[in-house]
Length: 210
Image (cartoon, rainbow, N blue to C red):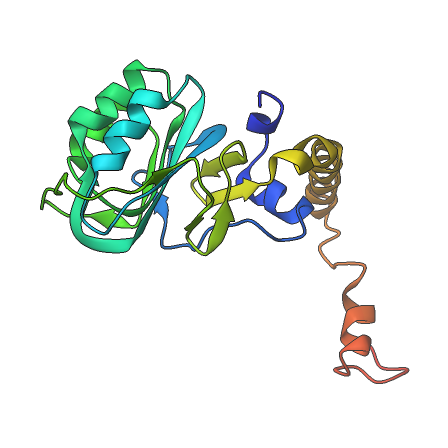
């Protein structure tokens, strides 16, 4: 987890075959927020947070609550009180396919929260749900134990069993991108692969060049 936390979400998504990135509607409450941790999945009915309270009671330090709130924005599922409890327990953050509230207080806490937005309405606490089962969050299937990394670009989730093999690829991609940026700084702005790709796409014919 420490090694994975060194990489941007975009780097990990790329080496994961451009898979695992949640829909962009799930975004950081503030651009500086970032997290890396192990998913603890929660499924709730829209507008009800009973099972989130139960998940907080079961969560371990380093967990990220990944909550399938069905994309509902009519009521906030979490606010300052619950986020304060998460921070006190050492949870790495919250990713929620639903709304939150008390965003200014959460900002002041500097606690990483990724959601579909905010709403001042409070939730109910009446409907059962599930903890630790596979959920769909932002169009991605998430299992408890999966790696979750999030930053200003969004959230990426990678299957637990794939993480170790992807770390060397992530390091190599960072090295390659650093080298390419250095080349651009030297004036080599043209991508070496561009003309070949244009020919393959039929934009350039044989013998033609940009």
